Amino acid sequence: MTTEADMELLDCRGQRCPLPVIALARRVAEVVPGTTIRVLADDPAAAVDIPAWCRLRGHEYVGEAAAHAYDVRTRRISR
Image (cartoon, helix red, strand yellow):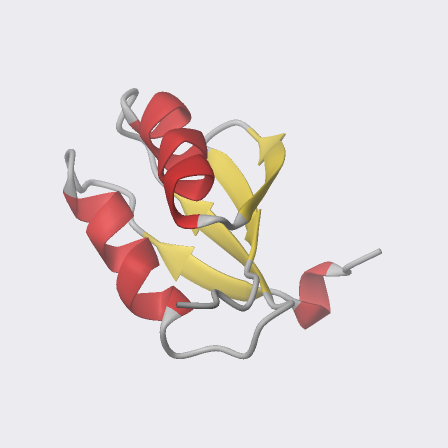
């Protein structure tokens, strides 16, 4: 289980769609596979957009850790 100390934090509060997903995509490219990224996003669309982006890109949507906090576990993407 990933602890908060082991997570990457991505603060997207105040950003509107599609900016939180764009920021997540950029951060995923910078971290090693298996890293969990907690995305803080208060845009209501993030609750739908982040899980959908994970499904499309092959990453694991771990879930909503708290209100407006979405956890994503990165995976290696084979091309």
